[in-house]
Length: 460
Image 1 (cartoon, rainbow, N blue to C red):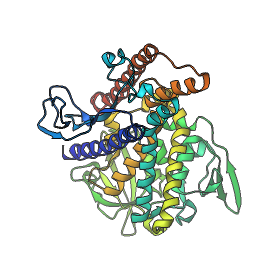
Image 2: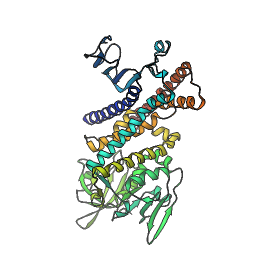
Image 3: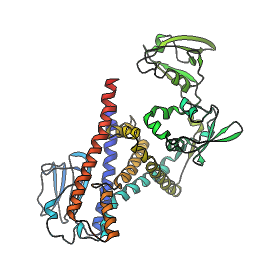
Image 4: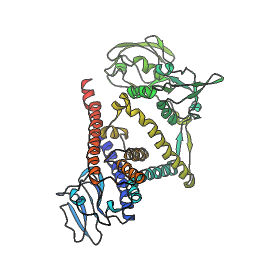
């Protein structure tokens, strides 16, 4: 329960920051062009209740836990009680509030609809710009404060071992991953490019060999997510570090310090080979060969319902192969800009996978988002995920779907090109359609979460 609360708190704080900064972009450009902003809220309120309201003098104060009257101004600020984002209500704009009463009146000079197409364009794109700026600023600060750790694959001295699927697409034992998509391969860019099916160059013996991956490899990984982590792993001997009390290994007499070298008489010098041989054999009995103090022994283990032996093993000390890059402030600025651009570039490239059957099944909602955060609070991980979500929010919001910023921008581009402004009625209908699309998508992705986290474990 504590883990769920920690993950949920991280997600709530992250989304609150992102939505506040996004809406602040709309607010800033509206104010710059002297367009009236009626409300600016973190979280959603109702007319009957909000946690905090700052109401301009002379304006009726709606019920709230804390109600403060502010002198001057025409914008009501506040914190709502429904923690699902926030909003910036701009006067004279067809938005999710669907304020037909205001739109039925003659346009006023300080309303959104009275501005030029160029001004309205900047007001609408302001949120997306803010999210990208936020992501870049976070990456700059992370580079300056923490630096950057890079694991170049060619530097891992034990080398790599590959899964059965990796062998099918062209990798061989002993291959040293040298380059991916024409760049020096590190763990991060290798996995990104693997999803995209980019070419990989490996050092095989004394020669360099180019491996052309299949175009469908990304779809395969979406359908078999466990294969991505098993695809390539460092050659790590499986030395037992701990034995779970009452587990299969404990019942068979295995001890910490035992080194597993065979499964059902098949030699398994590395962790990945042990894992692949016992996977899918829940409840089966397997013969394990292991070495204890230089002596070979065997044990029969009945695997548990997760096809596990009930042990933990000593991981490879990858820190010895990590290159740490430190940045001063001037160096951190271009490093943060490059990282922000790379994140957006890779997100856009991988977005096409969403339109495959496997991609649709892999989509997740708030549960999936929360699951990505660590179980214990970690500020590095928190800011890294917040920056990633900021990039994702910027891209998703710019999609030409009515009800999203991109839908408004689409109509504005049409107006600028054609010289004709769509009527409020057209915008109103588009808003309803867009809202329906967004609602259906939210139901779908959170339905996926319900299946993955509740129904599927129950059925299994």
